[in-house]
Image (cartoon, rainbow, N blue to C red; front, top):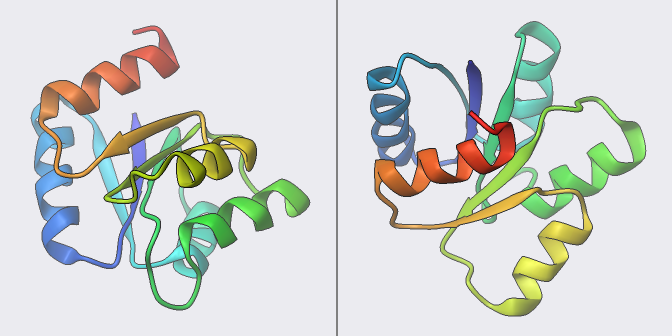
Length: 119
């Protein structure tokens, strides 16, 4: 699978991409929601791991824009430190299908991906 990792932290991207690579997946990095839209236009994306807090376009702003413009139908999994119930509810209401709390292990990541794709 091609998985878009949308996070302004290169360290987080490197950690997640290593997990994905070890499982035979390909990762693409976007530093924010606006960059993610560009990457979606130029890559086949099967799933999106989306951070909440980023410059330029936040995770919720990306979800809102996708809800109105429908630029991707790839499942979107939030990947964030934001753990308040209101944040989780907001992300899910805007179209995220799962919520992964940072920090997480590869087991948690792949459990969530399995839930989404029934692998």
